[in-house]
Length: 133
Image (cartoon, rainbow, N blue to C red; front, side):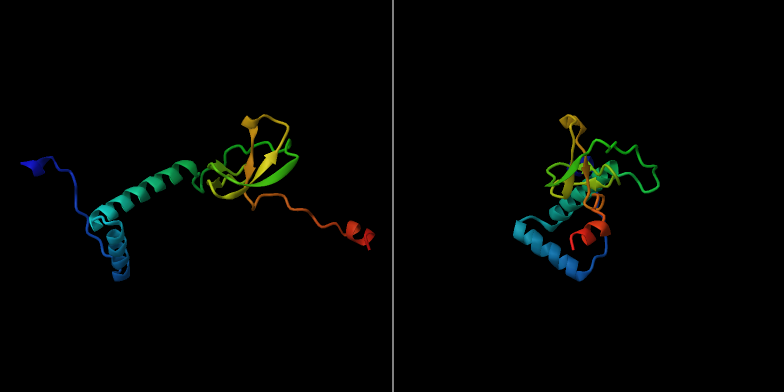
């Protein structure tokens, strides 16, 4: 029998009617069966979850050694084209994210990126402001 070699299973789940309509419209627009669309979406979601789990440390994990930023003489705002961790908070920065590249005299292999939340901000100095008045 042909069905003996089949390992596919059926999963039943309840979803809101609005979500069902969205899925049906999307499947119709893509000209694929709803079951294929849902299967592909589930596979993509599982793969994305695996990638995120493998790249981002769990909140209870001790942080890894952060990079030495003492050689950075400036920060250049950039749009990333690769995934990279923030050198300060270790948050995963993804391609397309705004980030800052640490400018150093070191080789390219020692490049560092930080997220916008971690970039140093200038401290207002009252003396400079008073002197300019």
